[in-house]
Image (cartoon, rainbow, N blue to C red; front, side, top):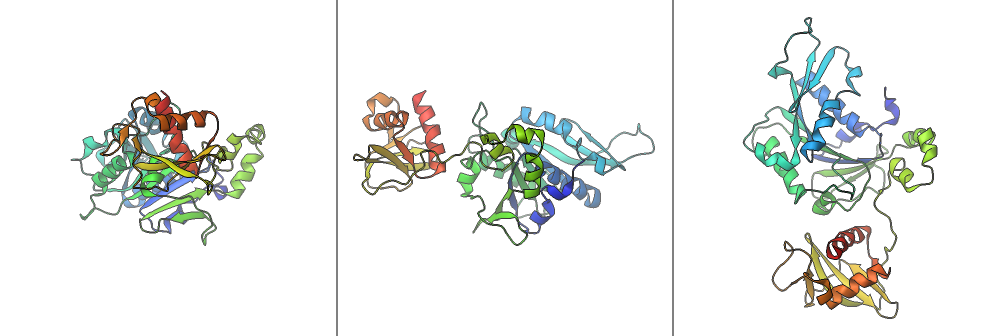
Length: 355
């Protein structure tokens, strides 16, 4: 049973009345629990349904099976059930053998990788979408190609903007893994740097209906630090991630502004990102920046998708002297990056070019 005073309070987030809510928090901070509670209450009180989203089919099966397990104690008068497609909720019937009906469907399971197959299906009663674990680590997992667009397509399928469909809120939930991800880059999102009037870490996009919340509950952090597990991981980078909500895959090693003596070396494109490489011969360092000289003729494309007129496609590093020197200096530790985002993007590029 959760001590709700130390966990994330979704009701405070809802007071901002924002369409897309990006919730990044330390593990066990109550992100999923809060969204489940909202979904259940919406159905019980208003017969409003929800959608639960995961990236791939294999990601969805077990979370659907376990969806109600940690929260059903709060609703002793109700029964809960899931199958491969639906979430069901109903008042406990007098006859325990009574069959479940369509009227008991409280929610739907969605797989983002196959969401295009549902474009002709209507969801008139869905008012809440929950995309759980939308950030991934850099192991064998992969984001979908143009994943933010896939999510927007699914959102449009469900919400039917421009019709009389009720407003659909989207909550995107994740642990703190990396700020370099398709969503932060696509919408130009930032992590909050100050608290709002409710003492919460909230950042609102200046032009889009999106907020980013950093779930940092000091009381929860203290409780977790004083557990056996907290003492086990004390002083490690995993503690920073699990307890302090610092991004696990991000650090500022090699992050440095370029020197005034740096000279433009070349430009390269990667997944809608255009970056420049500069060189300081006196310092013996290279710098990667977002400052671009559009007139500079030497422009590399790192993938076929990035290949455009007046660019050179990187097929063989050994035949491209400038990029070859850049890779060599990276291996020697002589490359600096002007932001963590740039560093993480370059890491992806270098992995591709070195394979």
